[in-house]
Length: 409
Ligand SMILES: Cc1ncc(COP(=O)(O)O)c(C=O)c1O
Image (cartoon, rainbow, N blue to C red; front, side):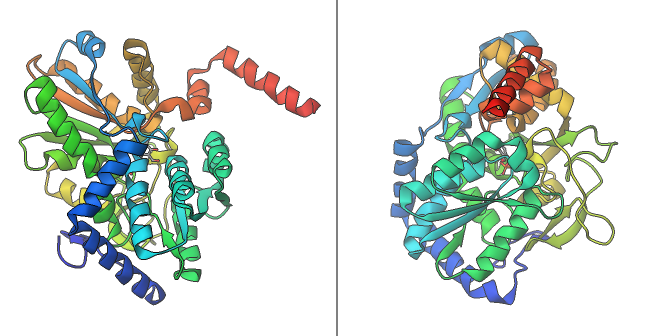
């Protein structure tokens, strides 16, 4: 990485003049923390004590038997407090906020996992908290909105644009410009202006460090391949980071939605639909029209339908270090169903994208080989979307009964 936060031709910092001093303050706090081993120790202790780290690496014996190929191991980020890897990043940023002496935190959220994690961190550290969330996501992730509000956060539904994650990010930046002195913007993924891509990846690097150690202990060898889903790219950067120096193939799986031919997807690196551009403060591949207006995206998983992608992953795609694939909504529901039935695990719809690709490749590999899938989060939060996707008639009857009860009140 160069000093301006570039990864090859991607990244950088394209911010309004008014935010320059705030970013300088953040970069200084981050660099000091990174150079201070006591900071990392405090962080690791906090995550051990508050968020169940190290998360286990579970051998999926039944899935392995089912496919008859490579041994399948699953890194259990779903066991973090609040149910996803998002907790790693926000707790790290929470410690930075304390170092900078700020009193308020804002965040954007798509699936709501980052919002819940930020609201949790704000409650724990005694910070005022506002979460921006696209109106569409508020509607499909109501349980997460409920928890954010119960923990004392104000959730602001964003009604502009496609009313999803990218619009929530724009709104969060607008807020930050008006209250820089006391507010930190806890960006939720490895995107945005420098230092966010690098800093978020650093906090998430715990995943890969643990996974590497665990797979060596449990399988006695390094994996041939590691799979992670890719929204903005933070869980992928986290797990891949443990294996960059190894002869391990890294596979990022994006949202293929209704199929790559349909345009109703959110695949930036596995499709040829995205083009290089500058938006939301950084340079990367965006799903945009020739005028630079962002396209509408689609995924069954609210956390994967973002128009941009981590500049670090864009670079690693260009250099060939990470291979990118896409999984369709339909394939995701099938992989989730199989994982529940064979292992009793409930990966989030986002995470299930990684499972799709792993399931395509595991049967073609030798039983001597090992693969690791990052289960970035748990699927219980997706019960409404999952139940719809499964078309479960009893669930539908239950929801209708509940709706009637509410109407009768
Ligand atoms: C469980 C889960 N996995 C993955 C993602 C995608 O984000 P990222 O690519 O930053 O890991 C999200 C986003 O909300 C999520 O909730």
